[in-house]
Image 1: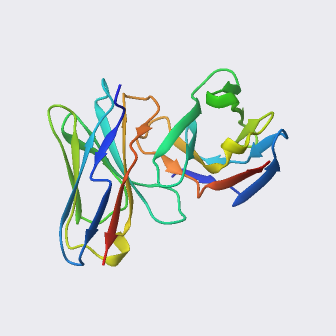
Image 2 (image 1 turned 45 degrees about the vertical axis):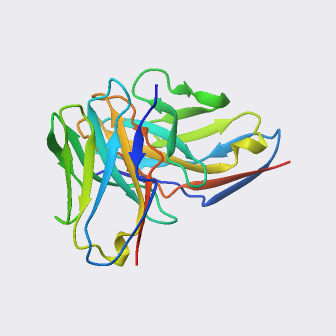
Image 3 (image 1 turned 90 degrees about the vertical axis):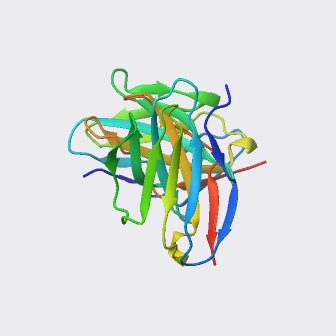
Length: 111
Length: 113
């Protein structure tokens, strides 16, 4: 079982650019959530996808958007990047009402 | 609203001694509680959870946690710490009718040989 896989592992972007991060859930999982972890802080919930729909959203601006595909994989898109968007972005997969399993994360640096 | 507090930024113990990492939570309904561990430049690794039932929950790598509803606490414990337990530990809560996890700020555990 490959677990949750994320790509890329590291990324450097310039302010104002757009970025897409990708996630493949653990085998058998149908729910994908995205979290942002700033340096020295706990992860903050961005949104959750289930059945290709955004089921719940955290306190993040509309610049953050996502998608879930029929095979349950997911993308996180961030437009008009700000320096403050620099963080570790974590993808987590789960089944309904079970524990979430996290990927290794994508380290995004905005310069 | 739901939230988690981890009152200690750092915990230092000697190898072989008991380890405790503290966590208190706040939810409007029934809590689902979790502990995760994070090693440098890695994602979060699941340790254990409390959903319902026995207040003492046993998890991976010899860790356990005790749910205390009256004190709204869910402290993580290990009877005998190892140097390899040195890492960043996060407590998380989810309300039973919610989908998002809310995390504490994390506690850095250092186990000295």
